Amino acid sequence: MKLKNENSNKYINDFSSASDGVFLRRTETNNVLGKTKPGKSRFIKTRCRINQQTLFCFRNTIQNTMSTKPKMSKVLVALGLSKLTIPQLIANSKLYVQNMTGNANFTAPTPTLAAVTAQINKLEAAYMLSQTRVKGSVADMHSEQKALNILLKSLSTYVEGIANANPEQAVGVIESSGMPVKKKSVHAPKTFTVKTTATPGEVELNTKAVKKAVYTYAMTTDPNTATSWVDIIVNNDVKNTHGGLSSGTRYYFRVATTVKGIQSPWSSVINIMMP
Image (cartoon, rainbow, N blue to C red):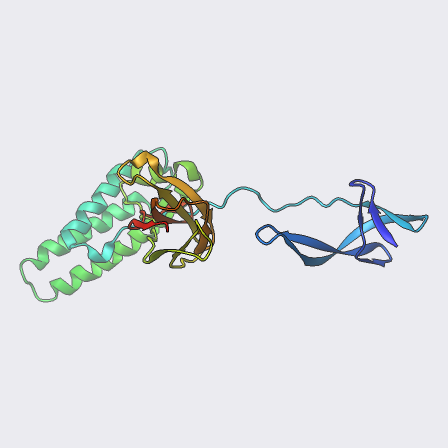
């Protein structure tokens, strides 16, 4: 018996019935090899009737609630507190308070700017006292420094929350506070090879794998002209082949990786003369 979906007018031969639905097995096509492989079984609630050995089913449509919007990574603050001297910490903290005071982006800072200012003043006084080498003054200064660092970390978390509520403007919002934006890391390919294959006019391109990366392979015959580069392959595979190349022509290749929408610098250029 075949199952026919009246909405699509297609038959599905691989199914098993149940009291209120059917189990279907999908087939999926491998676009690279042109072969089919069995897909996952899934249960579909249906209302069915039998007519001349064909099971007609009215499929209950279940809306896909998964978001189709691209996932956007959060923009973060990089205070670099551990790398700052006491005078630098004081100066930076005063800058944050100054930039956030009256700033429409930050209507209710947590902790309050008044609390941060009070702690800045305490640290500044402790620092000045430490310069006189009074016994115990250095320890007191570091205690006040630690207290200010805690407040600044909380304040940076508040700034990040406000900024990422509006992803398109996140960087500008953080910069308006005077706080530095954490740079996103990029992964440049560390290895890149090009070699001919047994197939005439074909090369194999290979680079080092990077987690969750998209690889862009580009080619040209004139590396001195920037506009001559053409992207020939863009996919998730570190190893690829590219054909249709002319014998006796020298080709130049390069590769870049893209992770979370950020493209790395291009790799070094490799050239090869096609035999």
